[in-house]
Length: 131
Image (cartoon, rainbow, N blue to C red):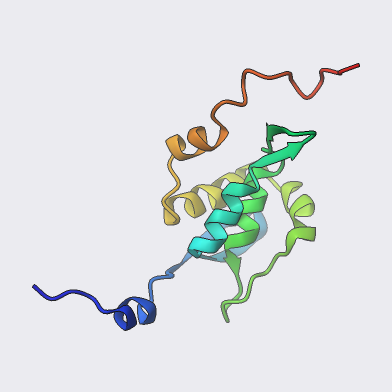
């Protein structure tokens, strides 16, 4: 049996792209797979720590992932962190379609999302106040 070498692995072109039609936006977007580092950062962004307590951060969840995945024809990201709020204001149908493809391409399952947000349902809601 032949095993991959370090160089084989590091040289492998494993970050695939896919084009997704988005009629609401009048065209097609190109998506890229996340790197391991990008996925880790995205997963870490789902948890906020304030006052020593952890809280689920689902704010613009879809837009945050889309901003990481949408690229131009040359492979450069179209969006930055400052664009996430603006992107989140776009059509939920369009965002849903693009997000679903991002999720599929990057191997995020519904159970992955549940696991990332596990244990946050038992605490106080965002609306509760402490005195």
